[in-house]
Length: 201
Image (cartoon, rainbow, N blue to C red):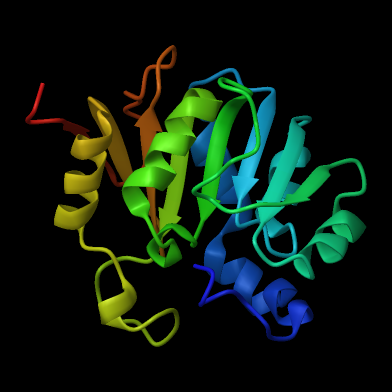
């Protein structure tokens, strides 16, 4: 992730086309569905696109990014949020600091996925959500060799000790929701939902 940090035009991250493609509000609603969440950590927050969406649901929001230059942009869109420079592998927060931890199209870029999931479990009280590019060719997003296959994600989730998770297939992305205790993931009203149980438990 440190080698692949974003150095382009920050305004491009806020283009109307990108916001529509990423279905920001739908992603936020899917993450919050069926739970009671008041605090959020957004890992790899960038310009604060997703953290802004969560804040509209009256959540106390915190965002981190490895790129210090992103933080002023995020603060400008979410002035009441808290923004820090940090890596996904070393989250500078106490255990169980947040109800929900969110990764918006950044998990495939991290240097040490097992360590990232370990850190996420430590700081999250209830749920962890990973928004990722689907494992198929698209005219946008990263090349196939930078995308994570469902099999690889299942392997990582199993290794991290997650017992149950679900995948919600959105129009252009896949949203993985992992239960870290206290919230039931089953919800028959979620579209294109697949629920998984670890084969190791």
